Length: 514
Image 1: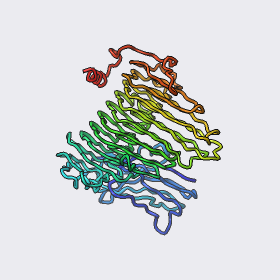
Image 2: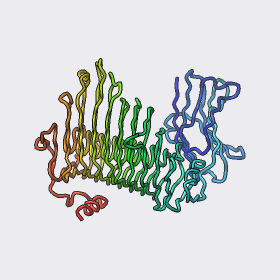
Image 3: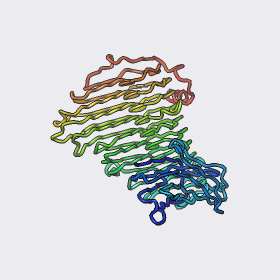
């Protein structure tokens, strides 16, 4: 039997696995996967593996202060209790030790132990590149940037390849000329953020790979300019601006690659963010799940995204290598690759997308292939949306090219391409979603063996909600060099006046006219 216990949190000190004295634990092991600390509280995630069903009694979480006094203890009776396990009312000046016990036979055995301190209330000023890098020694610190930092001439590695749970206030300053020479599991200036806060900071000329030498990864990766991964609903990014930056990434992962201009995979709260004059370019070589967006690659169930202006161009060039008898799933969005923030009402609101989306599909299916499903979802706002979006506009072009392979006779290919969404699967109603063409076309060239659904608004939907999806501007839908705009049944409006009640969007529209 295998038990997975998931607790939520942020870590100060490394994980200590206790194999238990005299091998009392047998084959039972435990790890703490995430650990978050605040000024007066902590929370965490853990995994307990019991392959031989050796645990015979209670599993207990106990917290000791620096004097050895028990300040918290609880027997775990249901896994749901551990979905967001936290302890509050702690004293900032004390050191604490967390221990997780299990009854094995007649013995109470320590499975895992960690000593930690709470986040420091002191503010640490960052004024040099070295000080920025040294944040790795305190991933729960409270940092303030006091001037611009120029990283020219140095190969950059994020201080936070493990979870950042502190605060970083850029005070409007800029981190510039940052160059990565390799991809890790969580790649971005702030790498991996758990319950941390990054705010009031600009990112300029951040380079992750180049056109001639895209950075390659063979295992799962999350890549974004600001952060690769924001793992918790308590992780926040506020008032950030990305300019003149590029991601050139090649992946042969057979599992997943989540890539976004701002964040690769996001489960937190993102507000007031822009990206402009930037490029997100991904070259998948395998059949792993691909989620690519101008702003966010993959949006988790608890995520919130508001007031985001995404001007990054997105290019995805699929170049299959040894692809045989496999299923392929690709989601590409001008703003969000895969929108799954279904647990928060009005989770995505006030978003603008102006970057162009270009997708080239060469699966290079191998000889002897007898099966396979290739599913491609492309949309101006999102490739796939399983929750609603309120007050949104997409004003870029979408171009998709695909030639069939001689060995794809037994492969099913399904392409969904929409000016707003490739597929919209939420029964929550989306309000005021607009495709603004302004001369921007949707151009699709595919082979005759593709099951194609394409629209200037929504390619396919299972939604029964009263969604407000509209189109304004000259119609522009070309499929295999034929203008099929007239066959596309959509709701067209002649003016944007009165359509939006979002000042975020109306102010942007006014600036475009001006």
